[in-house]
Amino acid sequence: MGLIAMAAWTVGATSGFAQPMDAHQGAQAAAPFALALRPPPAGGTAPVIAVLALNEGTETTDFLVPHAVLQLAQVGVVEAVAPRAGAVTLMPALQVEVPRSFAAFDSVYPQGADIVVVPALHTEDDPAVLAWLQAQAAKGAVVVGICSGARVLGRAGLLEGRRFAGHWYDRSTLLRRHPGAVHVPGQRYVADGPVVTTTGVSASLPVSLALVETLAGAERARAVATALGMPSWGSAHRSERFGLSLAHVGTLSINTVLFWRHERIDIPVMDGVDDVALALAADAWSRTYRSRAEAVTALASPVHLRSGLLLRAAPPDASAITVLLDSGMHPACVLDHSLQMIGQRYGAATRQWVATQLEYEDPVVRCGTAGPSP
Image (cartoon, rainbow, N blue to C red; front, top):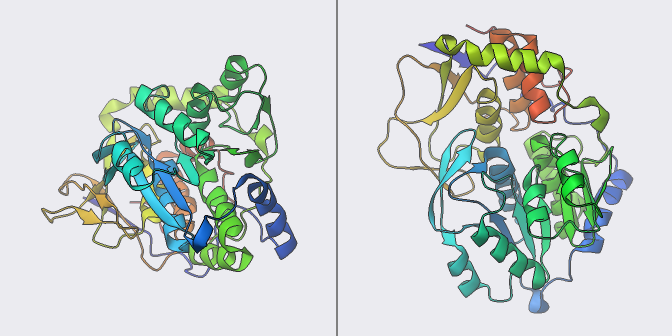
């Protein structure tokens, strides 16, 4: 069994998401959301934030990161919801339990959610999801589409005449489907009225922090960002750097063909494991087309994530490569670290392909240097 440890990095360092942002820039980042969000509920009650999932398939980071960050920030009542309560398969890795069905949520919150976060879903036109999302929007919710969640918003009729960001792979499709919509380049997230969209998977962290700033102020957002290892959550983004190149196609083809060299990556977990760190590691390692990540535990019972969600973990596999999450590392640094280790194990081309899928700047090392890959 191989072992990849994440303990070799400088704990106090920050990730490669962006450069530090001053207070004025932070206020600018939050401003579009301040215009979009409806006034706080009467009587000082906390805003209700629903993070949506589809039981059959929901993007790992798109779902786990906003849910965890908004919980950590204590900005409102954060509910994970799905068409059915119970197991949700995350893509490309992990499985969790979602406690509330759409029907149960509607019973508890007949006024609807203040914010609905929509990740990329395995089926973008699921009838139950679209009907529920349209109902929430009609009640006044701000709808936030993370990455390919913009496709779901489009299917629900929420992109018509709107400006949007969207994952690089989706933009031409969204423009073809919604002729009145306008793509905005150079922005990691875009708010147009009550509809917010983002670029790829890695935008889940900055947009979550922008929501925290809008709901609870810059000081709270900075505190959460510091805990995560995020120096900035501004919207600036070099969109032109991302696309499907011939080199990427070659890497994808070669890695897929070499099926006999595919590996399982085991990530040991226990109660209290950080959702953000786990999501970023599992997502990255499962996008190489050479490896697939599993959260593992020797315990028979489900594992509680730090956010409170239940994680369905698998038994360890003696033949797997083990990746250890260092609880002392800033969660945002785990993505940089994982990309470095992927590069060491599978080569620079695979590292770049994974970063491109996540729409993440292939990092100049800011979180420290990873140890050697076995």
